[in-house]
Image: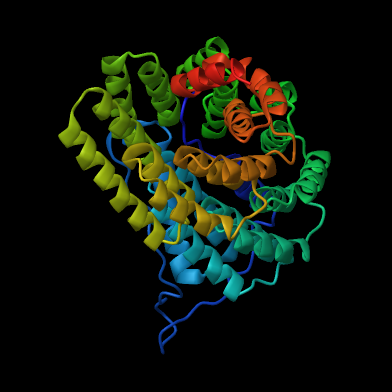
Length: 458
């Protein structure tokens, strides 16, 4: 079974380190500046920054929210009145956490950047705080898919501090996304040698999968979960990522176990609920899928949830609702793009999956390819668009580039095998197809049937 899921990439969990690292700094960090009136009796605002937003719905009912809200109010006031760098770093970390939990990415990503840019532009005396501001900014930029800028921020941080795991995490992430895989492995190894924790194990897991070691990826993600705290958001993220790994390679049983465990520990983890909706949809349980995705959407306005919602509406035969939702998705894409979030790949996938418009999909993914020509995921999507257009020669070329690390993603192998056969290389094509067909349950049904027919030819 091939589940089409937009997951949270592991790069976002780096921000949990911001709270831990800054807590090691002396409690009495000096404020940057304090402006006063002429009589020196009334403090004035040093910097105006966005405030924490109140949560809505079930997320506001979580027991943690009251403490987070109060902490956010106190930090916001302190930063605005004093410009205190340490408080600013705590506040930026809180904003990034809220972005993950609430899905309000356009607001919170930019709020965090506003706070971090203030610290960077008004550097505190403590070098550790300058370092933390740069690594935190790199993490936000990674979440916005601004990968080259994130790499540059991480490299600047490395000039200040070379013995902290966090900087190697952002450098690992940025190099992965830019397709600099050998460098990414070096950074990942450096990170885990300094601090073997949930964040470093998660990176090792992803790198292992990219290099064709599926079982090793599973083992590393299990270590990440074991290093986390049950019910915490980052542990839920790790369990959900492990479930997606199982789904990618056709192990539905273990995927469901991880999703159920995730929700037992954190019932409001919307991504796990949405993935169960994807599974129900794939299995033909349309009403159950609809109920699940409505539950996820009620928790947070995550883009990928509405993609699933549109697919469900199409299966229900509700063309009016389907068209309305996919048009709303285009608006969401535009809003995210205007907020600074690079959404080229998401745009390409929407046009490909919901509109069947391969020309617009190609335009969007080509824009990303020009920025990241060595990234496996980008090359896979380029190949997929050409595959859908029936241009198997170009498709094969991009699938070959996506395989430079020996990535064994079943969908990639299946399309690559078909393209090879369509281009006349039946011997190699069938060998690749045989590798993909071992994961029958992870493959789209139409793609699987096409592969089966191709195996009978030549």
